Image (tube, rainbow, N blue to C red; front, side):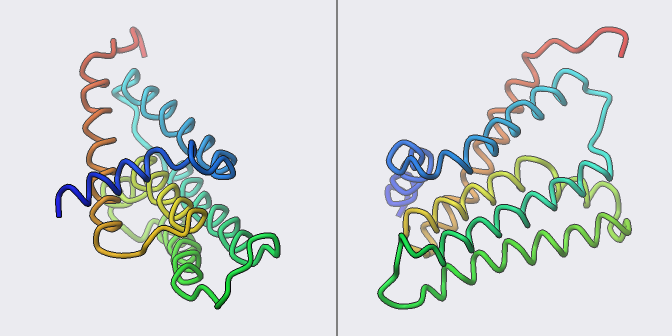
Length: 171
């Protein structure tokens, strides 16, 4: 099982290389994730604000809309309606709307809202949904565990980077 998870994880990570259409969605997701994480590593006293949490929620909505565009694109027809993929796109959009509501009205404790709406879980979730829909990847527990593992790996990598990154002076 672990070898299947690792294999699927590698397929997920390398997806933009095997399906170049993914680059248009994945590049902004990866680029913003890296820049924002490096920023918060350098300015350790700063924290995510409610406005950033709202922006991250909107990102899920926008990616979900692109996923619907992909599903209904006449250039990529399905033999049968892709209910599972449609459900994923809908869940991404509804999650974005729900988080937007929670963040806009400050319905959750700040620590929980900022954890759920931080760049790593939001961008990795958007990236995963993009890969699953664009590549027609199998939707199963292997993919789910690969998603969780990818979040943990990216978080771990940035924890190491943050520990090595010099803190800004005077800020």
